[in-house]
Image 1: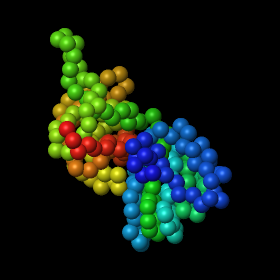
Image 2 (image 1 turned 90 degrees about the horizontal axis):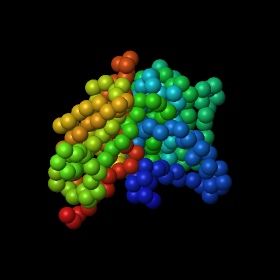
Image 3 (image 1 turned 60 degrees about the vertical axis):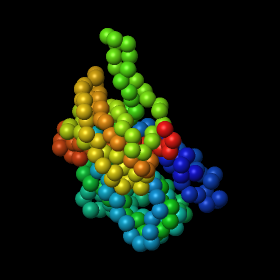
Image 4 (image 1 turned 180 degrees about the horizontal axis):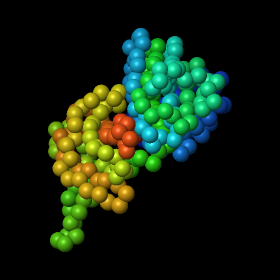
Length: 245
């Protein structure tokens, strides 16, 4: 279940049998929200946790989808410090026994926060509609005949400890992009240092060589928008590893 959703960039939502009939709402709410601002999947120890979410000025709508196995409480807090309420005019709110799906139209730029109480398996995905986008992440290799050299998709299995090359395409409007690898649970694994960078139309292309880590990983891109607000975009799917060369 977890491996399939992480491999595809989807989300698991833990539903009571009585809630299955209304599950289409979960999919419809994500329509057109192609950017991921934060993604956390893993076991949550008992207690309270808070997760920061940076919303930049290009975001037209943001959707917080949270599912926690033993959910006690969930709160989404605006940069102003005010908690999002179901009755707010800019909010859509769907409640389940083990989760919430909370959408906000024209969200205030700044650092939002998701506060959780409970324990067990957590799936938290924050999606957004924005024209500042992470357009592609792929493994590549250099190739081509003389005079037609370039970078081509590389589907060779990822083996821990080997050296690989990755291509990341983001909107040209993203300022000072920084790249890093993170785990499924959003733990930092280390930076990706671009070796090549160039502009291709309305995209900037960043190439980085890296040593494959020992755990599955995804790419996170951060930077700033035209107003100086922090931008973060997250690769939805997780790179899986192979143990054989």
